[in-house]
Length: 130
Image: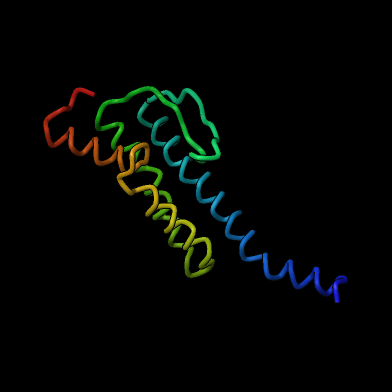
């Protein structure tokens, strides 16, 4: 039958997918808030916050010192790691944050992981100025 029962069945099948998308978006917003809070705490001016289909939510900010950049880059994944603690109460939200933290710490150009690795390399080399 193609009436209301079929529509209800389709909605029930798609609900986990849409729930995952919403929770992933929440994880992304909270991740970026981590960067923004730490940038403000370190007096690094944020020029703008944007959204792109191929990049997600992102921030453009002034260049800080290498230590400021390291802390700001670590802040987003750190927020996601803290939010994994919600896993026992809301496992899908914990999983969304775990995935977001792992994906963002990969050392791929433009990612937090790349920035973290670059800052760490510069610190180990002795590049403390900026």
